[in-house]
Image (cartoon, rainbow, N blue to C red; front, side, top):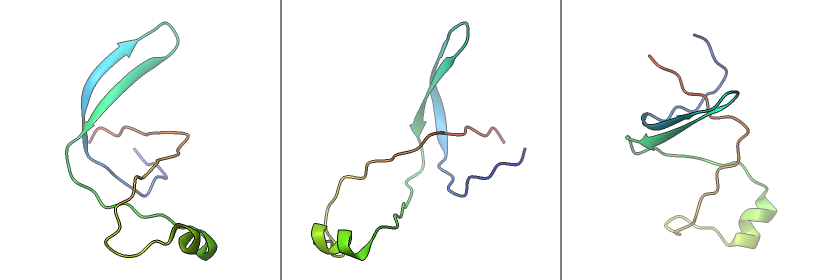
Length: 69
């Protein structure tokens, strides 16, 4: 199966809730991952971001694509 997503996070299926039209699948992330973000330099300066700072990452995505290998 080919897919366009570049980032891969390994996870275990935690639960499956099936409805007539849609289903909800919850995942437990099983491997620590490194994430990155591209933002404007103005934003970096406004947030005063430096190496070693602790931040909360908010993941904004339209799709999470489960791929069973």
